[in-house]
Image 1 (spheres, helix red, strand yellow):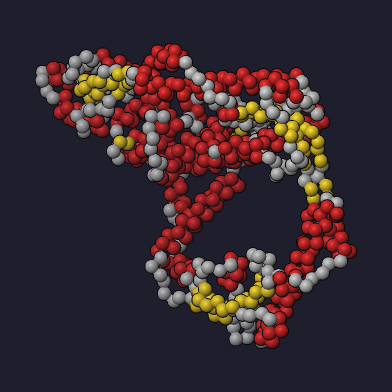
Image 2 (image 1 turned 180 degrees about the vertical axis):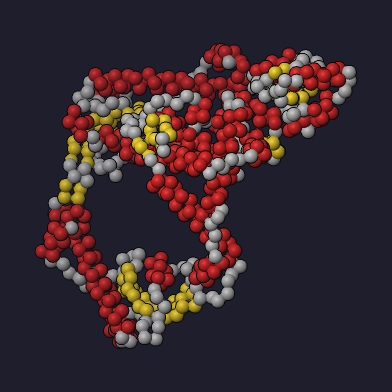
Length: 632
């Protein structure tokens, strides 16, 4: 992907809307879709236009990379679920389809970003900035490293800007009336006064009893609550490179590694040059030759660059570019720059991909090599890691061979490799021991094929130089536990259910008593008290269930009191009576912010409506593709 390649030489913060849009375009389609010839196999056809399987593959890989960076090891576990992988690919394909529909609508409406808009957008990209200003040398270097031409970048940015024009037309046309925002503003600051009576479950459960027949009946009626999940008992051996002894590294090996990779410890020669560039035209070389003659006659290179160069970014600084290393710019430009030997020497006219140039040498730095003493520790650490990885690889290969050659148990594996056999108790997919609590291991352990074969598993990679082989000892199918096994749990749940039913009945009685004005006598009879809730707002610290219920209740009238029952988060019941509602008459200082926020929400809805309308009227044909770990 283009920006991946740019970031190999530049680290920037993606904060501007235009950059987000451009990255979205590249992330979905990948550079491959711009610069490579599409394959014939297609993933979908949108109004006669193909979304190729290669485009989908590029987008899927980029999305995988993004999610892996965001979720870390958790994402690796998700990839072990074939259903998740299929859903992820389908989601990526839908995004590509939506992007294609937007592009088609842009073309239909003849929306087109101007050259000036494209130029300003490119100059605003953080990858090309230094000191918060566009840097032309950085721009050319990163383009050369990425293998993307200036024309390709320009066309891609133009496409994204044109797409943004449509989105702005949709989202930017959304609005929220001040009256609507004002109503929301006043409602958000509304205050309510109420009375609350809590009916704790303990008031109803303390004196409850349960016969054996009632407990057995509850067990039979709620058998699904007492289901024992599928369980397995396994043996396993774990190969873990981190448990191996520290590896000693010979000084001779360190010295040999240093000499073999001397270039890695060498700062190459660097040069700073300035250039005068003319865009390609029939007379550009002739004009540059005339400028070179003026330079030979003694005129200032800096002043001529400011006056004559078509590269206005470097021209404003007298043509000066940043320090460069050999092999980082256009090959012709690079060769000419490093052919200069004397300060202020001027090259002949040079043709590059970007135009015609005159180059002068401003300064140079000789190559420098770090001494062995300075990098000895880093080399030792690298070699130790490399040797450990090699040792792990050899053991892993032997582990796979032994597990396959002696499939009936892990004894031979343990004897030859010195790895202990760990035996587990019965566990379900939700209660697996931490060491093997990995989607790949559990998928294998609970596989029907694995159970029927009764052999060692293939080696299972766990990452971080860890691998495991498992052997099934015993399998237990999912089943309802015997009543005797869960009788205590049954009694506990049955009593709690009975208490909830009594509490619910009592709450309903209190609600009716309150409506009839007879609540005082009822509360006294049941030894319950009323809590006053005054000036409660939507942000007040209250039980969430109480707060939600209170602001969902209708305002009371003289004829109709507003009373309701509700369940609390601890399982208790409550009765709530709303007494008064106070809504501010005047708007707050947040009115403009609320109106802006509502407009944004409305704009998002309209954008989603646009996509839905485009999909509804489009001809979209999906092609069946094969889903594997790497291909869809």
